[in-house]
Length: 330
Ligand SMILES: C[C@H]1CC[C@H](NC(=O)Cn2ccnc2)CC1
Image (cartoon, rainbow, N blue to C red):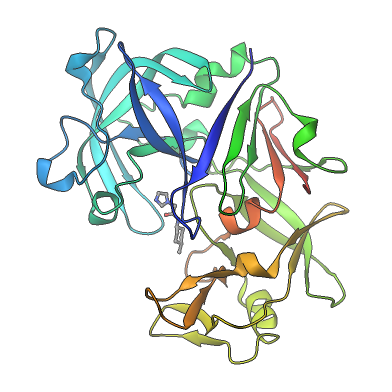
């Protein structure tokens, strides 16, 4: 089998990308953030503390004839942005892009942190990282990808994220109409459970490409691109008036600035991020100071190729026995 689901940016800054996910019988459709940087499928629900729900769609297990409580199971996740959620576990029928997992573990939130409450566009996450990252106790539960992979024509899903418009995630098929040129594959280190790979270098604007190994993760659940200090400083040195602001917690510049393109290497291939993608958004609504889409990864401890990078490419997440990532321009 194979399938495809449209994914849309939740706002004009492409802060996150959601997909419709059908849960239960009859179907309850929630808009989930497909997150290759984590491995829990969790949802706002009828069990979520009422004061922590603010406009999200909720999953009500008691209204689904196919829901089952997983007795004794709990979960709790904490993300790199310090956001958290936790609760209990049901199994139910879950369908994404026409592909169904008949008994998917659906982690039902009893509590969520403020940043989830304040984001009415996201009703939960669907983790597409490796099962080792799953937070369920006393034992981990499989991701949606893990549950369907055996039924897929090819053990892959692909990401075609776009700036300010709908893109798609495909399952079980690589649609060559969605990219230009050829795919370049790179090895994935699945420890500790991210889609972790080594980029072959970078280029800033028209400057010479710098061949150097940059280890990072392909993370659809992170908005920005986070790289080593030296690369980030070299990039903003070309942007007049840019500064690393303690006030705003990162590199900022005048919104009117012209930003150079940023190229990252995958093997012998090169992916070009248009400079405009690195003008992320005003620091506060209406400000003429803008926050950069490329930021320093030092405090994170790992480089993250988030949506700013991913939306410049077509990416194959290959879950075969030797997992790998395929990258192409588009
Ligand atoms: C400083 C960076 C900030 C962004 C961090 N990314 C995440 O937390 C991804 N995520 C998943 C659910 N909610 C957010 C990575 C560190």
